[in-house]
Image (cartoon, rainbow, N blue to C red):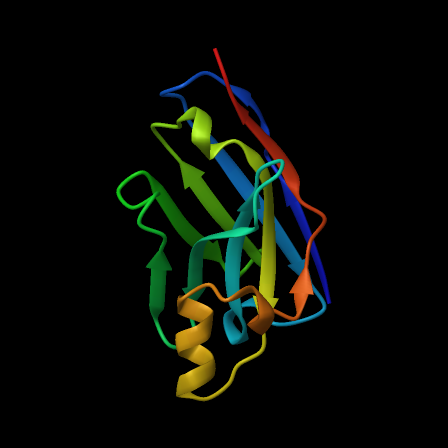
Amino acid sequence: VQLVESGGGLVQPGGSLRLSCDASGFPLDYYAIGWFRQAPGKEREGVTCINNRHGKISYADSVKGRFTVSSDDSNNTVYLQMNSLKPEDSGVYYCAASKPGGSRTQQRQLRLTPAVYEFWGRGTQVTVSS
């Protein structure tokens, strides 16, 4: 299982970025994929989860209405479209994969509990600054 993030960079406040998470070694539509971020000196924070197997998506309150997660199963890629970016959105963004499980596992995936995600990428830096 391998996850590789890309698409990060420097953007001005109010701008947009689209991150990609290229997955290999497992069927993307079988796992839940989460996006997390971590700013210097802060704990890792869940951003969004997409679970195509069960047709469910969740977002952190801080990004609702601004970020959109989607997937392209033919390319085994998950995207995170980020609009109206704010300086507080800065950080290293990671994608992570969680194996399918029962209802409790699904709840933890959607609540973006880091411990339930077994596989992680190395991250891509996003900096929102003028």
